[in-house]
Length: 305
Image 1 (cartoon, rainbow, N blue to C red):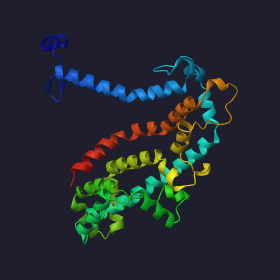
Image 2: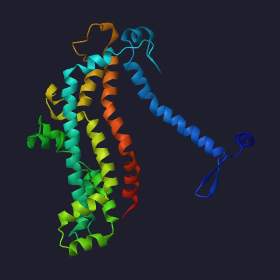
Image 3: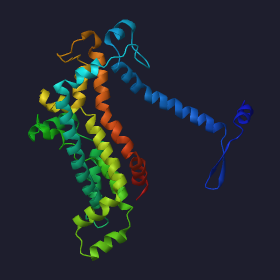
């Protein structure tokens, strides 16, 4: 069988930097496996999109759709887009994502810069002080009590301040900073630059791939967060995050009261599908733009130092 496959593809040759590469049996197997896993990863989105564009009564009678709607309808999108709760939760999530990402990058990169320095006094102590809580944390109840004591309960700042620092992200950035040539630091010191100036003007621009990677991790985590609304607020609609709004649609069947004229075209399932597609669009647009930095940032942050 191996010989027949080789003969069928005729050992196609590709030139790569002057070297001849033979396209063989294992290449075919690898491509098949990759395409299969790509389709498996893509199908939930296709299923959700098809459900959001389907006629609700058709789904109720004939069962779920799998690839394309049997009866096309935009009623679910219409109802979701006129629901005021969507926009309130969307604004809360955007503010939380932007504020949390900016604060997280600032705090984490500052600590990473300090811990990457060879001149830091008691460096091993500070590393140990950060690493231990990464593996052994107090848990949810102590965090809840702390947030109560700090006055952050049912406060918008609870979406931003508690997640301002991540030890894992700090390790990635610190590893990147340690890979920067010390001669740049020494030259800046000779020119009279302060530590703050060196961090902002030299280290942060050079760490752009790693910073973009960490920013993407923080932003995706913030965008997908709903536990903070459940645990640290009174769950008033003005405090909802986007994912909590989606959970109310999916789990509780909390359908908006204004459904439009055709009530048979929508139900809680089609509405939740439409809301999921709408809430996924910003991340889907953002990720391809930042993807070129994503892989580079992970590799450099993991290898350097």
